[in-house]
Length: 575
Image (cartoon, rainbow, N blue to C red; front, side, top):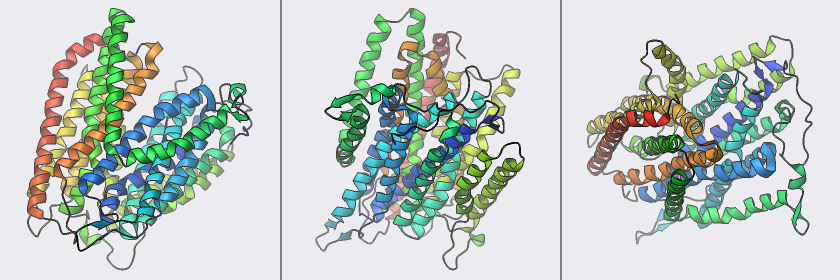
């Protein structure tokens, strides 16, 4: 980890499809990292309930604490990389921690049993490994997630017009990884055993780490430590600053593991952090800002708040939506086409297995059309096999979380075309209005679930197509709201505190995971030992939850829409 790669600059002409080759290294690293992350997350709630005998409320508490910490640690990981480690060392450290975490997740232990006295007996050792594995994943994401994005930005010269399209391509990797992960990890976990699903996620992260390590020369030396001498400085006897960071990451694991078992502790930490940030913000805007800066900073608060509310609704797709789908809806989109005999496997693993090889070959070929043929073939093969698997494989509640990524992939190009088209006619909504529209769609997404829940009978399930419609609506909201909110925070923040405001954005996302968990508990069920669902009770609880979420989303959107004109004035011309 300490030996730096060659930092000989790669010629600007050494591009692939008009972008630096390092972009594709980052793309596939991020794709595999998101494959492992979302593959594990799709399984988490049902795994705790069905294998370890957790109640709905307890499983959602773990999910909320995990999600909250995952989105909080990148703030610290980014700071350590910027000041000391550099992006290369931080990403490799994060990748190693993630691989270890996903390997640990494959340790199932024996299923929980219920004694005659009604007490649940769990595998204590396996649960200990589980919580340690979550801690490894949380720490790993903290080091990898913010820094791989930073590397992408450094690959392009200042004012390079290719930068926006480069980031668009990079973020496509997130959704491609999420799309494959649910279909593969979710299906394997529910069908063949939890260890297979978690193990597949671990193999994915190992592939991502291999792509990043072997593709170092294409990063043009931009991921190196900012001050190697400071990193080698001894601070504790023979221990250098670099090893202090590594030891700190290791020593944080028991703390993170304990916090995962005390979901309420994470929530209180988040509330205290938010209170401290609001106190700092009040002091800063009243004592350090000009009137224009003050109003622009207040408009940042608007976008952070909208982000928090939107993702508090959205992140239920991995909590209450998964549990509702598992218990109350059918699963197969086209039941007559599903393979029922034997043990079918997802064919979409084929392009994933081939991708590191094809990328390595493509990066090493120059002046040839073969890279276009190889990567084009890989893309077409991936699309065909994703469609095949979504139709013929018996779907599960975990595997159907792929619908979110699928609609993002389909809708993002449409959104990218729609805003410039509307701009030509003077109809392009302002950023505050787009935020309100996105929030409204988040509320509207719960209407199909409410209607599908109404179709459930004592001996009949609702149609899975209600879930498909819900995903379509909520992803319309995401492509409308998410891209513009983050850019607004970067544009409106006072430059001296832009990092703190970006941290507030991620902390808001972190807090939204906890809110999603709290909301999901409105429909929490106490499952009996035989696992049989009381359909009447479940229907009443899910119906009440979905009603609350509809009104929360629409009422919040109305307030945001009423505030939009004032927020736009506070932006002072920032578009």
